[in-house]
Amino acid sequence: MSLRSFFQWCDSLTIANAIRDSRFLFPIIESIHILALAVLLGTVIVVSMRLLGKGMKQRPVAEVYGELSRLRNWALATMLVTGFLLFSSEAMKCYDNPPFLTKMVLLAIAITFQYTVVRAISGKPDALLGRFQATAVAWGSLVLWFGVGTAGRAIGFY
Image 1 (cartoon, rainbow, N blue to C red):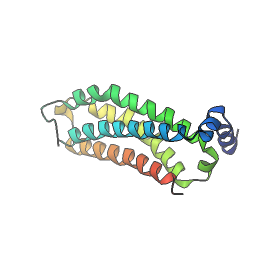
Image 2 (spheres, rainbow, N blue to C red):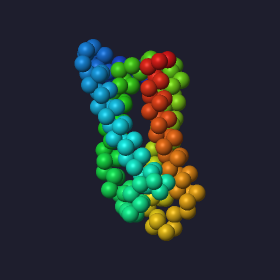
Image 3 (cartoon, rainbow, N blue to C red):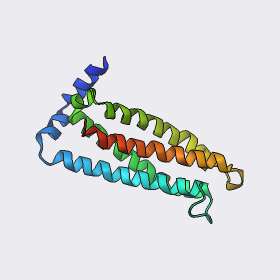
Image 4 (cartoon, rainbow, N blue to C red):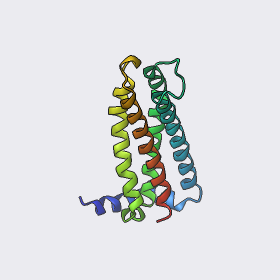
């Protein structure tokens, strides 16, 4: 199956047609998607600020990361489901859309980075965290996730 065929298949799904034909489904799904993005970014910001030593210094990084895991995972799962629904309703529009491609690449990198590098660094005891390493991971995470959001916003302008 080619990439174009996949996009056409998504575009022809029953749910995609229902979303396109409804006056209210797209904005409702998009609102949920953006709310989940805000929650995800909130968890990323809190963990990143802790890694940067800018907040919650009395709490270990591993504790902050762990306490936000369930919320972060819920937000990401919600974003992926609602994102697919939004995508399917305008899949052929997304096919030749550079911001969409940028968002998908950044999303894949951000998810991989979050669940490998950030998890590994955040799981270390604070005494073993190198300042440069923690700073690089925090900024990397922030840049990736805000890049996903920015590219997502740009999709509608192309």
